Image 1 (cartoon, helix red, strand yellow):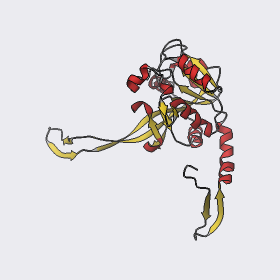
Image 2: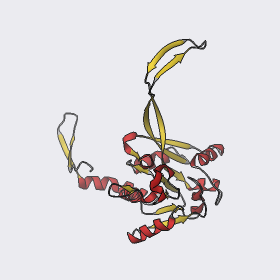
Image 3: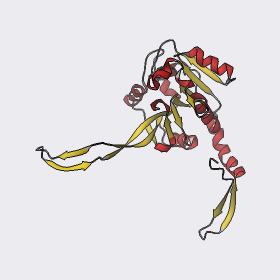
Length: 254
């Protein structure tokens, strides 16, 4: 779809065309998955000060940071809409009146705001939706632009019966110097020139069971890392859905 391909030939083992797959077939194929996804709400965590954005955050809140001829939060909403999501909660605090005014002026009226009375961290405001979600729900940070299959993400979460599943991108980091490897006596074994390490980095996108909300105290500051620790302490299951680095843009690092 992104490459404007309208027709795909389906081949057998002998490379003989046996069927043509069209855009219409594509829509029908994903319609069943969309029926599942459309019933899963998403919470966009947009109440932070956006300090990583530098001086820009002195004038505009993080959700209104410009991105691809739009704003970050509109890009996030459009991404979820494209997969069928219909219910949106937006957690706001910093310059919240400006965010609400922007939504009103641009007639983005299909979202419900969750207004923090104080800064509650990257997970604390979830306590304010306890009575508004009944099963699974998505959580995404307002500086995260992702291009993944929500259908695959959902099925991975359900198949493994995780209480919370986080999306992590495979990132490579190159050490800019020669790395010394020593033995126990402090003797040099070898020098590895500018080694590359690979890690899975949390991107700020999650799928969560509603029962997890019972672990969050109302109006108490709570980071997502702390919430994950609480889930693990209660013998809950936390999964990791790995993606390629190309499928994630961290707006806050720009």
